Image (tube, rainbow, N blue to C red; front, side, top):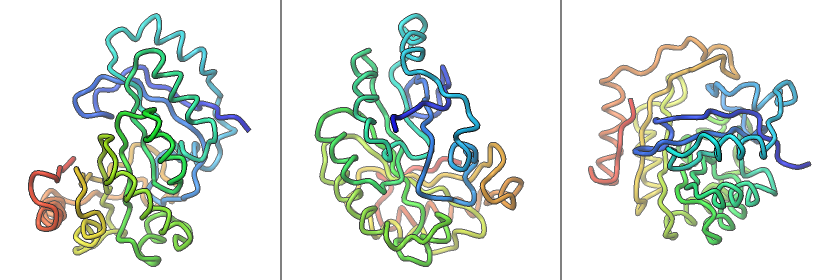
Length: 239
């Protein structure tokens, strides 16, 4: 099956810090994160209309003169074998490419990075890298994925590509000490982001759709955990 785009945002100023981008959405994901608000992309992608790549490219040629790049997100883009072709198509239009990924396909990640097909990678590290913690965060049995996630971390830390690791901290999923444990696993990283849970639509687990986010004080406490391990110059807070 070939990769089909299932969504498109023509302008975003928030998906790549400091850059004006468009955003394309790919369907499918090996995870079922209970707090994920891209529910249909993950669970019922066939319900969503497909968007031909050529239509997106035509729009960008006519209207994308002010854009710096494109963000490829999902779902999980790296499940698609022809993702390199998609990245290449955008690069040929003179656009920078950012990839959002959960790190479960290190082989694809390594191919994209080594081929220069991505300019920035944002990789979710959803919880401390233990089976119990990660399974709670990703909604499936996480143990088979953990070595692959660790390998993706290694690929990014040792690469020249610009990147960030990030954790969306979610009530009932994350507790004090979790961010510190995550940061111990990504020591040496260039950038780590603690970001607040903000449901922007129906979540995979309906209990999270209207769940109250962590308070500002709680977010700052998680941020402090990260700073204690990685140092203040490598940690960002996105409230």
